[in-house]
Structures are given as structure tokens and as C-alpha cells.
Image (cartoon, rainbow, N blue to C red):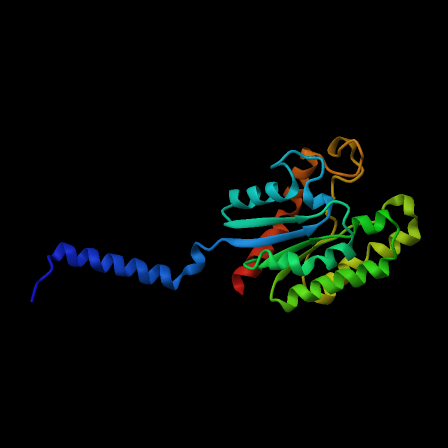
Length: 218
């Protein structure tokens, strides 16, 4: 019987140890995939490549040590109904996704759509995502002041209501600190500029990290 040199035996055991260790801990190096389902605020309207919400958020998370990929599923002009209608094929295009950021409703408010319909659409989106085992972060919106107090009181509360009803991660106002600040928005006064995006990313980052913890627990 051929005997292996002692050094060779040690090398073999080292390799076996690494294989067993890595095989038992696949999540240590596993990249998480998150879909950002939204409108122009998610899509990065008016911004150069790499300066929009999705790439800047991904970069911020990676800088904090998170192995994460964020898929940009933002469509400019989209409403909550539009997001719902394209949800299935969006998910089909990202079969490894573990979570979804839902940022929809701003265009519903800008068009003065019935808040009840917005709530129904968002509820349907969340329900489908949870049925597929995906974690959800719901980003809240607020109605523009020009639509009046009555509309504001009917529209804005739908987000915390849905978050509580479905038990999802919740960021109360996506444009916190940026809305109505001319120096943080493009010339249209609606879409954030690069500086505004950095503020949004910084503000929402803790909520995203809670979402990642939820993914890791599953």
C-alpha cells in the first residue's frame, strides 16, 4: 500500500476542511438580490448613468459590507396600477430575488387618482410578493399640497396602513428632506438631482439594512 507523505496528508485534510466549511456556510459569500419596483424616482429620471437611486443605493450598501445587487425596475410615469400590471414579468426576470422595494404612488397623486384604488393596487402587489416568499420594503409618498387637505388626508395614510396590515418594512416618505427643496431637485421641481439622491439614499439606508437582516433570517 502506497503511503502519502505527511505534508501531503496535511494538505489533503486542509482542502477537505475548506470544502466542508464552505459547503456548510453558503450564505457567507452569497450575494443578495433586491428588485426596486418603482416609477421615475427609482428609474433615475434626468440623471447620468450611475447617479440614480438604484446604483447609488447599491454602492452605499456595498460600502457598508453588504453583498447585494439591486435590479432597477423603475419605469418613468408609472402608477401603482402600472406596477401591478408588470409585476409578474418583472419577477420572472429576476428569479433569484429575495426582496422588493416598492416605490409607487407618486404619479397616482400627481394625477389626482382615487387613493382607494392606489391602496388596492399596492395591497395586491404586496400580497403577491409575500405569497412568493419575498421580503418587502414599502416606501411611502405624500400628496402634493396643491391637491388640497382632503386629498392629502385620504392619500398619505394609505402607506403606514398597508405597512401595518401586512407587516412589511416601511420608510414613511421616500422624498424626505428633498421634496420642495429647489437646490436638491432638477429644474422641474419634482425629480431629485444627484445631490438629492444622495440624501434619499442616506436616509433610507437603515431601513434597507433591516430588510437585509430579514432576508438573512429566512
